[in-house]
Length: 296
Image (cartoon, rainbow, N blue to C red; front, side, top):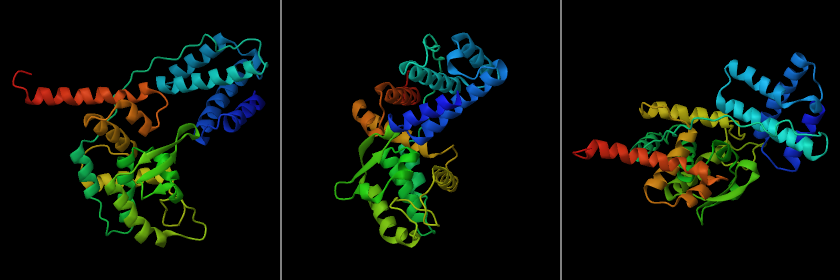
């Protein structure tokens, strides 16, 4: 089974162009399943796997405390793996053909309001070492609705100050153009011309955001930076990079932007993913109505 998993992961990388994070997640799900098959049922080849066997495995994982969203990821990994094997003739029948995805309760994303975003940004001390960099990070996350990985991978050659456009590569290696707001451009200019040259070392790449060592900032480090800035801002809520992406979309919608445009800006493949922000906006409108209408 391990050999077939290796072959499948190579297919995801070369033929489908899927991200390394997705490949790692899928490999982990499949390897754990293969290990269980081998130890619990002495099954080491994929053509001996049956639908009842998979259902038993998922049931055990659920009883072990695995969340519905995590189980869904496992089911998706198994489905695409066995569909791949079936497609190349390694299986007579796909054992996941009738397997259904678990229902997941959808939670509305948290957001900051516009005043809270302003408070967070204005609390950043740009005279502090790396303050210009850190402000540029927060400005860009909010101005363009980037995923944290897209921000980490953003490169100088893909940033057009004249057009105020950044070319980013999102999920599935899909490229899109995102506008960069005037204030974010100003913050980026200050950082790139004043602070970034001092961070550049011999091994530095062209990534916009660099660490003290001159290397590309990792997603973990960007997360830590935003969390630290949030603590210093005095805002008593859980602030993290993706919250700024949620806020970006919600503020666009509440100010009249078309949902399809927001979908394109966020890089969502499916409009249903973007539609969650309409529910967030409705919740906000209801809260305002309840607070201010005399007969609410």
